[in-house]
Length: 491
Ligand code: ADP
Ligand code: MG
Image 1 (cartoon, rainbow, N blue to C red):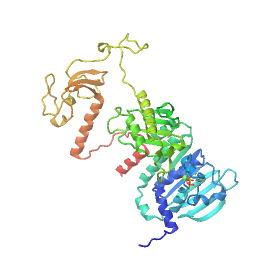
Image 2 (image 1 turned 120 degrees about the vertical axis):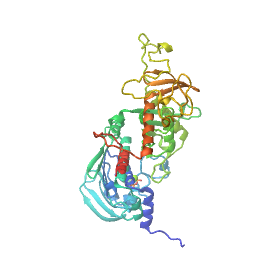
Image 3 (image 1 turned 90 degrees about the horizontal axis):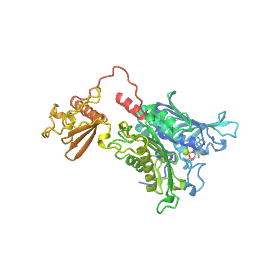
Image 4 (image 1 turned 135 degrees about the vertical axis):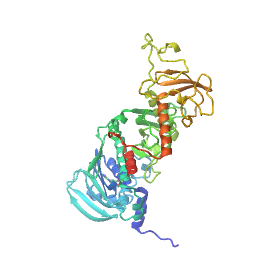
């Protein structure tokens, strides 16, 4: 085959593919430009999950009329002057690739006015080619409208998901930026309907409520810590890291890592090591396979991180990765441990409540400890835990003396527990039992849930999905992602 240089339009489409993968990538680039332009308000509108229309409006600096066309040239940027700048980047953009990339694969209109000009400019482009330019009245700032994304790249078009799925990605993206930039008022409308809005109050907690709902937000705790290597062995005070954000307390957790959000120097990143650091910090506090929710902003000096390692800037490289990861881990661990409530023990009257830590002998604890192997008294009528059932091993082993055989069908006795002898119950919540290898503390509520879960799972496997609609509708708070997945399943 002969080597030939690609036609310019085709080369532009290929380049666009690296940056613009789906409607949410357009939104990401346009939001980043608005943030770089100093906007305090960013409005995002979409139709058909952004496939038909996306519009991002900001009240930032605007683009001087003489530079409007230039902004759509490749490698045209106002944010970088020399190669040295590349290693101390403080803006989100720096490559000058977003606007030409988006323009190459859509029908785009930009209306912009900078503060010191009386009128704005409206520029229209089709597939990257300017089709119209005119002076236009406009408020200060920039409005970019992107229609029919990938209209000229049929192969890309085929990879687009349902409108619901694409809008879920956009919703998630907008809420993440809103969390990381709480001083900016964000809004998102879909088919002209307002679906998300952040107050712009400057408080991340306020945005958490807007994103996750008050119930979930209430279960998240603030983390704020700084670390410098100045006082550490071999440290020169050069490496510093600040960690700020919110973490779920261990009671609030999810089955995947989708709700672990990280920003490094204001940039949304996907970083396995950061994720791992946080998961590790919850070690022993969460069951295996469960993950916390978090929004963490990690700040390091601009020259301590290389942001130019990924086409859509979703990954970064730290100069001192170990330092940063352990700073994150320590901050998270300290916060979570500090916030995890220790189950309250009721102290007997007379025990010292104010003085130094009370010294209690076992007998002094005002707890209900029944030294008996007899069935436990259920905490209350509502708790239907059958105290004995789950304390027994598989049916092929005879229970030891002092225990009695549970009255349950063999297939329900599949818990991988050894034979346990019940010693007592603490705080009407935990069951203390003795087994061949030591003492077992069993959270009876969790055990009950587990029994029900196993039961439903078996029924489901045996009968196929069986579902019954609720008598009364039940309102549940869903994240954008969850809402989309639910809608997809119900469709
Ligand atoms: P980059 O952000 O990497 O510089 P872009 O292609 O995203 O590249 O944008 C090119 C230039 O256009 C930016 O450097 C900036 O000067 C200008 N620009 C783009 N969007 C905006 C905006 N919303 N407000 C003000 N200026 C903008
Ligand atoms: Mg940009």
